Length: 206
Image 1 (cartoon, rainbow, N blue to C red):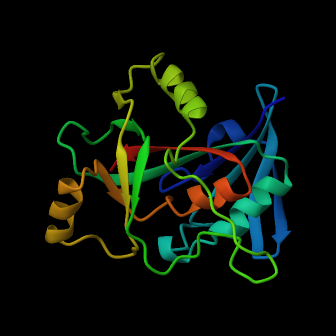
Image 2 (cartoon, helix red, strand yellow):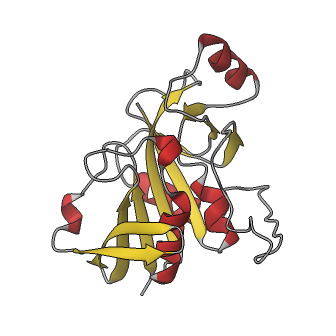
């Protein structure tokens, strides 16, 4: 049995496929995380709504550490995350899916590590390839069986939020090689890598 987690971004709050899942509050050292837990196609699946009930949590206030800690405590081995984004690439149009392979982090105030106290010490993680190639291949294989327009690679630029970007920032991000821009969930990716959990994010152009 695979142990999978889905972190739903904007627009993905409670998929019909998860009907009958049990809702649980998982206590962590970083706060509580609300999870829906069940079995789907023979696999354990845990679903978390990134922005909370009713989209009540802005991107810079998402408790990424509590979410990732909860998923790890439930035995999660693979994370798939969705998010709505803006496009910096004219080929990536509204309604397209992008299976990201790279990221650029422009966040400023978010905590993205568990190792920030003397008791835990110092830990470094290789972030050369921020998204798991194995999980990316699985997502691509699934998308190839559909009529959904998608892109096999893309560079996601993560900003602080909750404000949108200035025209000058958008121009700069595109010059740096960014394809997509948004305010989440890049912060969760290094956090998951530090536990570790395999992770993959795919984006839908907003």
